[in-house]
Image (cartoon, rainbow, N blue to C red; front, side, top):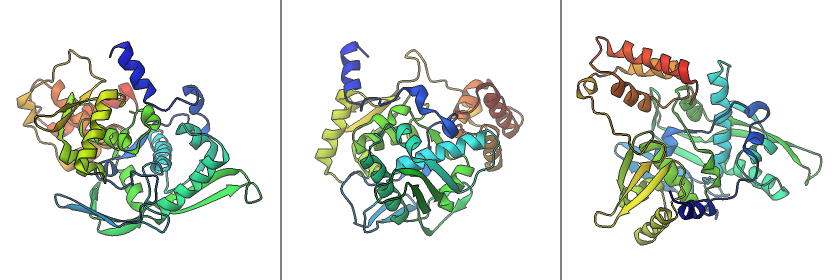
Length: 348
């Protein structure tokens, strides 16, 4: 990326409010940004700051979700920052071998700094409103998490309480919330992905959503291609196709998404996500003999526990590229590979 393009990309991001080393304080010192993978596949969150109270339904293959907002509106993609922060802390504790539970206390000031927000009165008030929308938005779904399949109705958080200085305008001190069993189950099953810190610097809701989709589908691969029609469906954007295409072209022009570079093919109307984190000379490795080795579900679960915090699909691709011939016991070989990977690199 040349200097002019770099300046344009930086200008398209919200300025970094705090020094990076000041963000990781107290009980978030070892936390990394995490998100729940099933949420990244389906549009659970509104992409508008205006209240959205319409019931929304989505079908993806045999999976479906129905979102029922509260009187305050559907939970937004900015409200989800609270869950990312909570998940980050829980994953850090789990990686250190500490016990975790559904109920977690968050320091409100640390949360605002962690998510690159201001710390004025309106920012604390917005945090309280976010908790109300997360608690009030009902999700009805049959999405699978781990080895369970649910057909339930639940809120993203089961309950929330706040502590503030005495008085209606008293300073908010901390928030305590309880994650839904569905979300907590996904955390225990290691269904998480690491996000780039600049996620919190993206200005527009759609930019955040498109980054999430790129992170989920492209991951550590060299590239991922998707039609604009499918991308719009996965994003949950309510704009018409023409407007959505313009928004995507705008992201392509400014080239400011973390981790991924977008390009648009007008002839076939599709978008390609190119992984910025890979060396430009890297060539995708093809090892057909190892690709034929199938892994059991039990081995996948053991491998997740052997390398907590890592995307198991990414590790599987790395393992298949690393092996030169099919192992006698693919399950044992993969689990051993993950164990060694985590020992050398630690959490993602």
